Structures are given as C-alpha cells and as structure tokens.
Image (cartoon, rainbow, N blue to C red; front, top):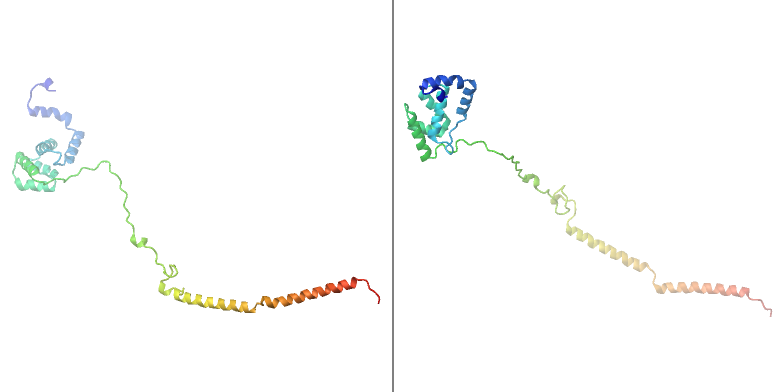
Length: 220
C-alpha cells in the first residue's frame, strides 16, 4: 500500500485504514485482546506490555484522556502491583513514569508475583480419599466367658469356672458310687459255678433215664 500511494501524513493513513480495519469484528477482537491481557511478571516485559495496551485503548477510544488510559491499564496489573505503582506515580504522570515505576517494582521486589495463575492443562481427576471411620471399624464387644456379643461378662448366664470344677467333682463322685454298686450287685464267678454244675447234672440224669428206657428188659 505504501508503494502504491507513496509518502503521506499520519492523518491521511488513518483515514485510509478506517474503512478497512475500524469495523465491528475488529473492535470486538481488540476489546477481547485488551480484557485478556493480564500482566504476568514471569512472562511479560513491563515496557512492551504497557505500550501495547495503550495502543489498543487509543485505537478503540481515540477521545479517551491519557489519565483514563493509564488507570485502565493499571487495573490489569493486579491489586498489589497496582497499589505499589500508584504510591510511586502521583497524577499527573506520563507514560514513561509509569513504565519506570513498573520496571523498578517488578525487578527489585516480589510484589505482584503469582497473582495470576493460568488454567492448568491436563487436569487429572483425583478421587476423594476416604478415611476409615474408626467408630465403625471397632470390633463388637464380646463376653470373655462365653464369647457372646449380647451381654457383658458381669451379666453372663454361664457359671464361672470354679463352679464348673465343683460340678465335675460331684459328677465324678456319683459315677464312682454307681460303678461300685454295680460291681457289688453282680454275682461272682464262684457263685455262678454251682448253678452251672447243677444244670449239667440234671442234663446228665435225663440222658441216663433216656438210655435206660431204650434198653431191653430182662426178666429175673
């Protein structure tokens, strides 16, 4: 375009660029660029960043005063950094004064650092860590006598071990007495022998009688 028209003054160039650039899409793009331009100490240089924001505002609002332009730019610096610059630069101040104060603060102090954190990329969804509930994890109480969970040891219906030993002793005594009586009541082997012998004698006598009946009778 410069080759076609040659050298001209800035007002002439401004009139030529208005029909091409100053339209609604261009204004919308410039406004979004200014709103998203938040100063970052680790990424931006104070002089280039400040001048770029001033050019955007003057292009969008040619009639805006320089003091208002400076105020709107300082709002993009963050609370601490903006407050420090305002304490140094008292109106009326030039653009150069603001840039010098901004460079001194960002290079010599830690004011304004980590004010704006960009959104994290590749966020990993962390599962909530469930802590164990100690109240529910406790083992149920048990009776140490019978092992039941329905009562305590002081109300346990089961008798103590001492009573169990006494019961066992009584039971053993009773069983011993019963066994002694059974032994006394049983007949001895010596007493059983005569009965067996008598039965055998009877059997023998029956046999003798049977034999005698079958023998022939002899007359005298």
